Image (cartoon, rainbow, N blue to C red; front, top):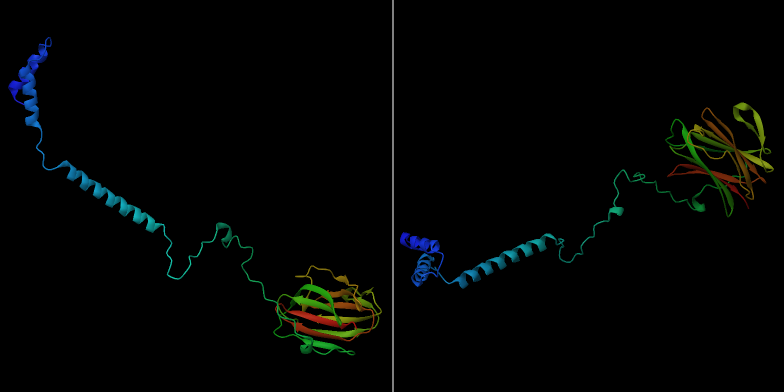
Length: 256
């Protein structure tokens, strides 16, 4: 705008009363036309280019976001679902990560030693510890025999002796006291190199109610020797052998 125009405009505002002159309006329009920047190109082309650029940018962002959330799957395979939090276990949550030993199959009767009907039976242990710790004593009855199982948690004892016993009265180890079991005849089991008070907390007097083996009772646990007295309803043949995993002494008494 020229200096003359600005002066004329100021005069007109100063003389606020009255209608601006037509000459002033014409000069305002002319000055505005002169100060307007020249157009460098059609506006519609610039708008179209800006729209295309925006569409391309949005498309790239959508594709990138989609790829980030896809699970990588090889051709011909199914995705593996992740385990739920409840299915995961940290070492501290695991009650015991030590696997339990797989129990060995009980051999068939054809592979077991024959029954002995008279005289003693002796079993020698293999790779025996200084003291074998008894940790379980169980009984059971089967077709043809009643069974006693004495389990050890660290290996076979040094030696086991079994022999028929006259009557059912037994002497209790170092105390010298006598106990009488149920039945009419008995059997004595002596386990050398064993301990039954460190790892065993079960009963030491078991009444079974079986047809032949009616009662068994611990009669000694002293200085590495464990003895059990067996009360039988009749004289019977028997056998003894070891099973492994876990180590256990098995005694079968014929019941037929």
